[in-house]
Length: 263
Length: 263
Image (cartoon, rainbow over all chains, first blue to last red; front, top):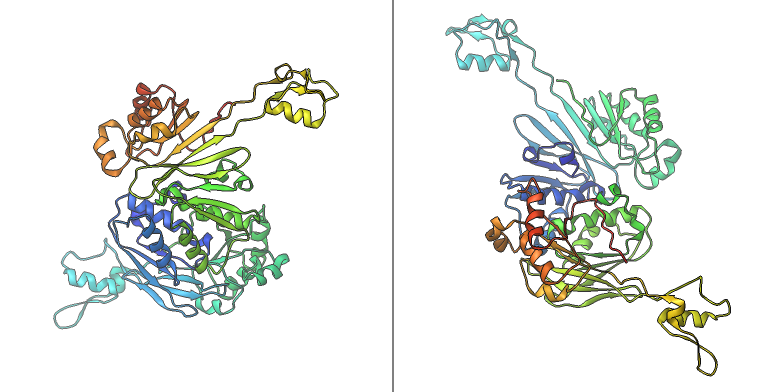
């Protein structure tokens, strides 16, 4: 329903990453699969989750005497270990072990290095497709004897930045995260509580806004998004301010908002 | 989410009736249970459903390594048979066998006869509690010799009307319904299609708006609510008009609307 409300395009969703099997983190998935089915989806849907989700999905479909028209390919995560779970031409997705009450993983999305950008105004007309492809990887243009005809730097601009995003859902404060999310462009880190409820955070294996900011600061993240706030907080500014004292570039992750990561 | 949006009070929900296990008819239940848990519910929750829902719920809780703080009491429906599944001082709830692609039942809610209403302006001050209770059941007030002191009709008004509501979710056209929902105050009957898609309705075991109206007319229902419209209909007035030709007191069941049944 939220995807519909914010004009999300279901057809563009091919990979879904579920951090852990608490209801607030995956119950909407079943309705989403059902809606994709009604919308005549045929493309494979890849779902990454800890053990159990397959049984949950198949139990539901068994009793509905139906099955989706598309294939669901379930990738089972390994708890407590970093692993690359998806790699294609554009990016890699790596798990981030989190400390919660049950198997729980965050996800680190890193774009691969991008091609150098050819300067259309300076490019000679006689270059072959192969030479153009070479320029994008950083090669100079050479003649048949291996002599440089054009230097790469004269015909291309630096590639766009490869962006990265780390999603750290439910977790207790864990300094091991600092290394894994080092210099990430955007870090999402849960901030269920404020420091005044630090005991409650420890007991329930959640973090405070200050702790989220601590991780962002130590990891030298570009920006921090905090979310997953306890319903006890009617106002969210105190959480934001608590984090900002430690890490200035903090924003509240509120439903329906869009954040652009510059290339 | 819809309950929240329309200010539904979760604490007042103690019985939930699920007609069948297609996703659009029960997937929200799991989020609702989860929300009730977060809201510190302690009262029992009774759920009425065909076989399978218990396994679906327990599978989810098994993998979340958690359980709700309240008891869920699951009542398994018998397919293809009318049965009283709930009876208390106020009402009875009876299943309505429906014709769909899997076990599917509607629900008939009938209020029990209500007490006669005592006319406070005419009631003598010296009546005992027992005599007052007797008046509500229709008894006269008699003296110790059995002689009538006051006629019931002089001290009371007729009871309020006992209301009834039949919920017939997904079903092919089925004349057997006519008897079961005879003279119900409000009949909800699905109307997934229009007559122009009658073949599609038969194939998918759904009904047309005209068929829903046919049942309402033959059952002499007070009002008809039609719903469960196929997403192909961007405008719903044609469905409403198709039904109204056959049964005038028809309304569209649209999310968030409230219908009052007069006593």
